[in-house]
Image 1 (cartoon, rainbow, N blue to C red):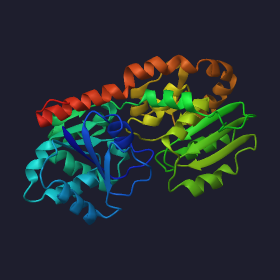
Image 2: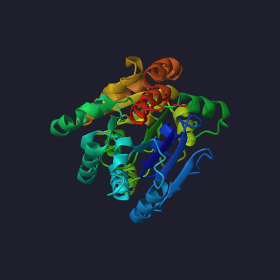
Image 3: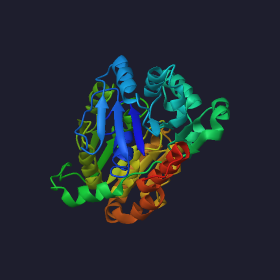
Image 4: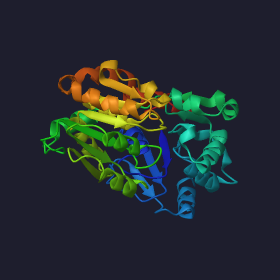
Length: 362
Protein backbone atom coordinates (compact mmCIF):
# COMPACT_ATOMS: atom_id res chain seq x y z
CA UNK A 1 0.00 0.00 0.00
CA UNK A 2 1.27 3.47 -0.93
CA UNK A 3 0.10 6.44 1.11
CA UNK A 4 0.34 10.16 0.42
CA UNK A 5 0.16 12.31 3.57
CA UNK A 6 -0.66 16.02 3.30
CA UNK A 7 0.07 18.43 6.15
CA UNK A 8 0.74 22.13 6.56
CA UNK A 9 4.03 21.79 8.43
CA UNK A 10 6.59 19.23 9.48
CA UNK A 11 8.22 20.26 12.74
CA UNK A 12 9.00 18.92 16.22
CA UNK A 13 5.33 19.09 17.27
CA UNK A 14 3.83 17.80 14.02
CA UNK A 15 1.43 14.96 14.90
CA UNK A 16 1.08 13.81 11.26
CA UNK A 17 4.82 13.18 11.21
CA UNK A 18 5.61 12.16 14.81
CA UNK A 19 2.60 9.96 15.48
CA UNK A 20 1.52 8.83 12.03
CA UNK A 21 4.49 8.71 9.66
CA UNK A 22 7.06 7.56 12.22
CA UNK A 23 4.53 5.14 13.72
CA UNK A 24 3.95 3.47 10.34
CA UNK A 25 7.59 3.55 9.28
CA UNK A 26 8.63 0.24 7.74
CA UNK A 27 5.03 -0.94 7.43
CA UNK A 28 3.99 0.93 4.31
CA UNK A 29 5.42 3.19 1.62
CA UNK A 30 4.77 6.81 2.60
CA UNK A 31 5.21 10.20 0.97
CA UNK A 32 4.87 13.17 3.32
CA UNK A 33 4.08 16.40 1.48
CA UNK A 34 3.93 19.66 3.45
CA UNK A 35 3.25 23.25 2.46
CA UNK A 36 6.04 24.79 4.52
CA UNK A 37 9.70 23.88 4.68
CA UNK A 38 10.64 21.07 7.07
CA UNK A 39 12.01 22.42 10.37
CA UNK A 40 13.64 19.18 11.52
CA UNK A 41 15.71 16.40 10.05
CA UNK A 42 13.35 13.70 8.83
CA UNK A 43 13.73 9.94 8.81
CA UNK A 44 15.43 8.67 5.66
CA UNK A 45 12.86 5.90 5.26
CA UNK A 46 10.06 8.44 4.72
CA UNK A 47 9.95 10.43 1.49
CA UNK A 48 9.35 14.05 2.49
CA UNK A 49 8.61 16.91 0.12
CA UNK A 50 7.66 20.54 0.72
CA UNK A 51 6.79 23.57 -1.40
CA UNK A 52 8.54 26.19 0.77
CA UNK A 53 5.29 27.97 1.63
CA UNK A 54 4.04 28.28 -1.96
CA UNK A 55 0.45 27.13 -2.50
CA UNK A 56 0.89 27.11 -6.27
CA UNK A 57 4.16 25.25 -5.78
CA UNK A 58 2.37 22.57 -3.78
CA UNK A 59 -0.36 22.31 -6.43
CA UNK A 60 2.29 21.67 -9.08
CA UNK A 61 4.07 19.22 -6.79
CA UNK A 62 0.90 17.24 -6.19
CA UNK A 63 0.06 17.20 -9.89
CA UNK A 64 3.45 15.57 -10.52
CA UNK A 65 3.02 13.08 -7.69
CA UNK A 66 -0.46 12.08 -8.86
CA UNK A 67 0.31 11.69 -12.57
CA UNK A 68 0.19 7.91 -12.33
CA UNK A 69 -2.47 7.82 -9.57
CA UNK A 70 -0.50 5.12 -7.77
CA UNK A 71 -1.41 6.12 -4.20
CA UNK A 72 -4.04 3.86 -2.66
CA UNK A 73 -4.75 6.34 0.17
CA UNK A 74 -4.39 10.11 0.47
CA UNK A 75 -4.48 11.20 4.12
CA UNK A 76 -5.25 14.91 4.55
CA UNK A 77 -4.34 16.50 7.88
CA UNK A 78 -5.54 20.08 7.36
CA UNK A 79 -8.29 21.85 5.49
CA UNK A 80 -5.78 24.07 3.69
CA UNK A 81 -3.79 21.17 2.24
CA UNK A 82 -7.10 19.52 1.39
CA UNK A 83 -8.07 22.53 -0.74
CA UNK A 84 -4.62 22.47 -2.37
CA UNK A 85 -5.15 18.77 -3.15
CA UNK A 86 -8.56 19.61 -4.63
CA UNK A 87 -6.97 22.22 -6.93
CA UNK A 88 -4.36 19.69 -8.01
CA UNK A 89 -6.89 17.05 -9.05
CA UNK A 90 -9.49 19.39 -10.60
CA UNK A 91 -11.14 18.64 -12.98
CA UNK A 92 -9.81 15.40 -14.48
CA UNK A 93 -8.89 13.38 -11.38
CA UNK A 94 -11.71 14.11 -8.94
CA UNK A 95 -12.19 10.34 -8.65
CA UNK A 96 -9.18 10.41 -6.29
CA UNK A 97 -11.48 11.87 -3.62
CA UNK A 98 -12.65 8.27 -3.13
CA UNK A 99 -9.19 7.51 -1.74
CA UNK A 100 -9.10 10.31 0.83
CA UNK A 101 -9.14 10.34 4.63
CA UNK A 102 -9.39 13.64 6.50
CA UNK A 103 -8.39 13.95 10.15
CA UNK A 104 -9.81 16.70 12.33
CA UNK A 105 -6.96 17.23 14.77
CA UNK A 106 -8.71 19.73 17.00
CA UNK A 107 -12.02 20.61 18.56
CA UNK A 108 -14.24 22.62 16.25
CA UNK A 109 -14.50 25.64 18.56
CA UNK A 110 -10.70 26.08 18.58
CA UNK A 111 -10.49 26.52 14.81
CA UNK A 112 -10.42 29.95 13.21
CA UNK A 113 -13.38 30.82 11.01
CA UNK A 114 -11.18 30.37 7.94
CA UNK A 115 -10.11 26.89 9.02
CA UNK A 116 -13.68 25.93 9.90
CA UNK A 117 -14.73 26.77 6.33
CA UNK A 118 -11.80 24.90 4.77
CA UNK A 119 -12.26 21.87 7.02
CA UNK A 120 -16.00 21.82 6.32
CA UNK A 121 -15.42 21.67 2.57
CA UNK A 122 -12.87 18.86 2.84
CA UNK A 123 -14.96 16.88 5.33
CA UNK A 124 -17.87 16.98 2.88
CA UNK A 125 -15.72 15.77 -0.01
CA UNK A 126 -13.49 13.17 1.73
CA UNK A 127 -14.32 9.47 1.69
CA UNK A 128 -13.71 9.12 5.43
CA UNK A 129 -13.47 11.64 8.27
CA UNK A 130 -11.61 10.79 11.48
CA UNK A 131 -11.61 12.91 14.62
CA UNK A 132 -8.85 12.83 17.23
CA UNK A 133 -11.20 11.54 19.91
CA UNK A 134 -14.82 11.45 21.00
CA UNK A 135 -14.72 15.02 22.34
CA UNK A 136 -13.45 16.28 18.99
CA UNK A 137 -16.28 14.43 17.23
CA UNK A 138 -18.85 15.85 19.66
CA UNK A 139 -17.56 19.37 19.05
CA UNK A 140 -18.67 19.34 15.40
CA UNK A 141 -21.84 21.44 15.00
CA UNK A 142 -24.99 19.34 14.63
CA UNK A 143 -25.80 20.54 11.12
CA UNK A 144 -22.33 19.71 9.80
CA UNK A 145 -22.25 16.39 11.62
CA UNK A 146 -25.61 15.43 10.11
CA UNK A 147 -24.01 15.70 6.66
CA UNK A 148 -20.95 13.56 7.46
CA UNK A 149 -22.01 11.24 10.28
CA UNK A 150 -22.12 8.10 8.12
CA UNK A 151 -18.44 8.45 7.22
CA UNK A 152 -17.09 9.87 10.49
CA UNK A 153 -15.09 7.80 12.99
CA UNK A 154 -13.63 8.88 16.33
CA UNK A 155 -10.08 7.54 16.58
CA UNK A 156 -8.56 8.39 19.95
CA UNK A 157 -5.12 10.00 19.75
CA UNK A 158 -2.20 7.86 20.83
CA UNK A 159 1.35 8.56 21.96
CA UNK A 160 4.54 6.57 21.48
CA UNK A 161 5.60 5.39 24.94
CA UNK A 162 8.57 3.55 23.46
CA UNK A 163 10.02 6.88 22.36
CA UNK A 164 9.75 8.17 25.93
CA UNK A 165 11.41 4.99 27.21
CA UNK A 166 14.26 5.46 24.73
CA UNK A 167 14.76 9.09 25.76
CA UNK A 168 14.76 8.06 29.42
CA UNK A 169 17.41 5.39 28.78
CA UNK A 170 19.68 7.58 26.68
CA UNK A 171 19.37 11.01 28.31
CA UNK A 172 22.52 12.55 29.74
CA UNK A 173 20.73 13.75 32.90
CA UNK A 174 21.83 17.33 32.41
CA UNK A 175 19.34 19.20 34.55
CA UNK A 176 16.76 21.37 32.79
CA UNK A 177 15.45 22.74 36.10
CA UNK A 178 17.22 24.51 38.95
CA UNK A 179 18.30 22.11 41.70
CA UNK A 180 17.14 24.60 44.34
CA UNK A 181 13.50 24.44 43.23
CA UNK A 182 11.09 22.44 45.39
CA UNK A 183 8.63 22.05 42.49
CA UNK A 184 9.46 21.71 38.81
CA UNK A 185 6.61 22.66 36.46
CA UNK A 186 6.44 22.29 32.68
CA UNK A 187 3.84 23.99 30.48
CA UNK A 188 3.85 22.85 26.83
CA UNK A 189 1.95 24.48 23.99
CA UNK A 190 1.81 27.35 21.55
CA UNK A 191 1.95 30.71 23.31
CA UNK A 192 -1.50 32.02 22.42
CA UNK A 193 -4.82 32.98 23.97
CA UNK A 194 -6.37 29.54 23.50
CA UNK A 195 -3.55 27.79 25.40
CA UNK A 196 -4.10 30.40 28.13
CA UNK A 197 -0.64 30.50 29.77
CA UNK A 198 -1.57 33.90 31.19
CA UNK A 199 -3.94 32.20 33.66
CA UNK A 200 -1.02 30.29 35.17
CA UNK A 201 1.15 33.41 35.45
CA UNK A 202 -1.69 35.27 37.19
CA UNK A 203 -2.00 32.46 39.73
CA UNK A 204 1.74 32.41 40.33
CA UNK A 205 1.73 36.12 41.22
CA UNK A 206 -0.34 35.50 44.33
CA UNK A 207 1.14 32.38 45.95
CA UNK A 208 4.21 31.58 48.00
CA UNK A 209 5.97 28.53 46.56
CA UNK A 210 9.57 27.76 45.68
CA UNK A 211 9.24 26.59 42.10
CA UNK A 212 10.53 26.77 38.56
CA UNK A 213 8.24 26.94 35.55
CA UNK A 214 9.45 26.14 32.03
CA UNK A 215 7.29 27.14 29.07
CA UNK A 216 7.94 25.16 25.88
CA UNK A 217 6.42 26.59 22.72
CA UNK A 218 6.27 29.64 20.48
CA UNK A 219 3.46 31.97 19.54
CA UNK A 220 2.07 35.46 19.18
CA UNK A 221 1.72 35.96 22.96
CA UNK A 222 5.41 35.36 23.75
CA UNK A 223 6.38 39.00 24.33
CA UNK A 224 3.28 39.73 26.41
CA UNK A 225 3.78 36.63 28.58
CA UNK A 226 7.45 37.38 29.19
CA UNK A 227 6.58 40.94 30.19
CA UNK A 228 3.81 39.75 32.52
CA UNK A 229 6.11 37.14 34.11
CA UNK A 230 8.38 39.92 35.44
CA UNK A 231 5.78 40.55 38.16
CA UNK A 232 5.90 36.97 39.45
CA UNK A 233 7.78 36.70 42.80
CA UNK A 234 11.50 35.91 42.55
CA UNK A 235 11.14 32.58 44.38
CA UNK A 236 9.32 31.33 41.26
CA UNK A 237 11.84 31.11 38.43
CA UNK A 238 10.38 31.23 34.91
CA UNK A 239 11.94 30.23 31.61
CA UNK A 240 10.57 30.59 28.09
CA UNK A 241 12.56 28.13 25.98
CA UNK A 242 10.60 28.36 22.75
CA UNK A 243 9.87 25.38 20.53
CA UNK A 244 12.28 22.53 21.19
CA UNK A 245 12.80 19.07 19.69
CA UNK A 246 10.33 16.40 20.74
CA UNK A 247 13.04 14.44 22.56
CA UNK A 248 14.11 17.53 24.50
CA UNK A 249 10.49 18.23 25.43
CA UNK A 250 10.24 14.66 26.72
CA UNK A 251 13.39 15.18 28.81
CA UNK A 252 11.65 18.12 30.49
CA UNK A 253 8.58 15.96 31.19
CA UNK A 254 10.73 13.25 32.74
CA UNK A 255 12.33 15.80 35.06
CA UNK A 256 9.23 17.87 35.88
CA UNK A 257 7.02 17.17 38.88
CA UNK A 258 3.96 18.81 37.36
CA UNK A 259 2.62 19.38 33.85
CA UNK A 260 0.02 22.13 33.53
CA UNK A 261 -2.44 22.89 30.74
CA UNK A 262 -5.03 25.58 31.36
CA UNK A 263 -6.10 25.55 27.73
CA UNK A 264 -9.54 26.77 26.69
CA UNK A 265 -9.70 24.26 23.85
CA UNK A 266 -7.80 21.27 22.45
CA UNK A 267 -8.01 18.27 20.19
CA UNK A 268 -6.70 15.40 22.31
CA UNK A 269 -3.28 16.80 23.27
CA UNK A 270 -0.31 14.49 22.76
CA UNK A 271 1.82 16.51 25.22
CA UNK A 272 -0.64 15.70 28.01
CA UNK A 273 -0.53 11.99 27.19
CA UNK A 274 3.27 12.05 27.11
CA UNK A 275 3.53 14.02 30.36
CA UNK A 276 1.18 11.62 32.09
CA UNK A 277 3.28 8.62 31.04
CA UNK A 278 6.53 10.44 31.90
CA UNK A 279 5.34 10.68 35.51
CA UNK A 280 4.10 14.24 35.85
CA UNK A 281 1.27 15.19 38.15
CA UNK A 282 -1.33 16.92 35.96
CA UNK A 283 -3.18 20.18 36.51
CA UNK A 284 -5.72 20.49 33.70
CA UNK A 285 -8.49 22.84 32.68
CA UNK A 286 -11.92 21.30 32.83
CA UNK A 287 -12.64 20.98 29.09
CA UNK A 288 -14.01 17.95 27.17
CA UNK A 289 -10.67 16.76 25.68
CA UNK A 290 -8.99 16.80 29.10
CA UNK A 291 -12.00 15.07 30.61
CA UNK A 292 -11.71 12.41 27.89
CA UNK A 293 -8.10 11.74 28.92
CA UNK A 294 -9.16 11.63 32.57
CA UNK A 295 -5.86 10.75 34.31
CA UNK A 296 -6.04 8.70 37.55
CA UNK A 297 -7.55 10.85 40.30
CA UNK A 298 -4.49 10.66 42.53
CA UNK A 299 -2.35 12.07 39.70
CA UNK A 300 -4.51 14.94 38.46
CA UNK A 301 -6.46 18.02 39.50
CA UNK A 302 -9.04 19.60 37.22
CA UNK A 303 -9.64 23.35 37.51
CA UNK A 304 -12.06 25.90 36.14
CA UNK A 305 -9.93 28.51 34.39
CA UNK A 306 -12.69 31.09 34.92
CA UNK A 307 -12.27 30.61 38.68
CA UNK A 308 -8.69 31.77 39.54
CA UNK A 309 -8.82 30.56 43.17
CA UNK A 310 -9.13 26.97 41.87
CA UNK A 311 -5.84 27.36 40.01
CA UNK A 312 -4.16 28.85 43.08
CA UNK A 313 -5.51 26.08 45.32
CA UNK A 314 -4.28 23.39 42.92
CA UNK A 315 -0.73 24.78 43.09
CA UNK A 316 -0.85 25.02 46.89
CA UNK A 317 -2.13 21.44 46.99
CA UNK A 318 0.92 20.38 44.95
CA UNK A 319 3.16 22.22 47.42
CA UNK A 320 1.59 20.35 50.36
CA UNK A 321 1.94 16.87 48.82
CA UNK A 322 5.04 17.27 46.65
CA UNK A 323 6.81 14.32 48.31
CA UNK A 324 4.02 11.87 47.47
CA UNK A 325 3.82 13.36 43.96
CA UNK A 326 7.52 12.65 43.42
CA UNK A 327 7.18 9.13 44.81
CA UNK A 328 4.12 8.28 42.69
CA UNK A 329 5.55 9.00 39.25
CA UNK A 330 4.86 5.51 37.92
CA UNK A 331 1.15 5.42 38.88
CA UNK A 332 -0.15 6.63 35.50
CA UNK A 333 2.03 4.53 33.21
CA UNK A 334 -0.18 1.46 32.80
CA UNK A 335 -3.29 3.63 32.41
CA UNK A 336 -1.57 5.67 29.68
CA UNK A 337 -0.51 2.67 27.61
CA UNK A 338 -3.79 0.83 28.03
CA UNK A 339 -5.93 3.75 26.88
CA UNK A 340 -3.77 5.90 24.61
CA UNK A 341 -1.18 3.73 22.89
CA UNK A 342 -0.11 4.95 19.44
CA UNK A 343 -0.24 1.30 18.31
CA UNK A 344 -3.98 1.18 19.01
CA UNK A 345 -4.51 4.47 17.19
CA UNK A 346 -2.57 3.33 14.13
CA UNK A 347 -4.38 -0.02 14.07
CA UNK A 348 -7.66 1.87 13.87
CA UNK A 349 -6.33 4.03 11.05
CA UNK A 350 -5.08 0.98 9.16
CA UNK A 351 -8.64 -0.37 9.19
CA UNK A 352 -9.81 2.95 7.74
CA UNK A 353 -7.11 2.76 5.05
CA UNK A 354 -8.15 -0.79 4.20
CA UNK A 355 -11.79 0.23 3.83
CA UNK A 356 -10.75 2.83 1.27
CA UNK A 357 -8.14 0.91 -0.68
CA UNK A 358 -9.84 -2.49 -0.45
CA UNK A 359 -6.33 -3.96 -0.39
CA UNK A 360 -4.61 -6.03 2.22
CA UNK A 361 -2.26 -4.05 4.39
CA UNK A 362 1.35 -5.16 4.09
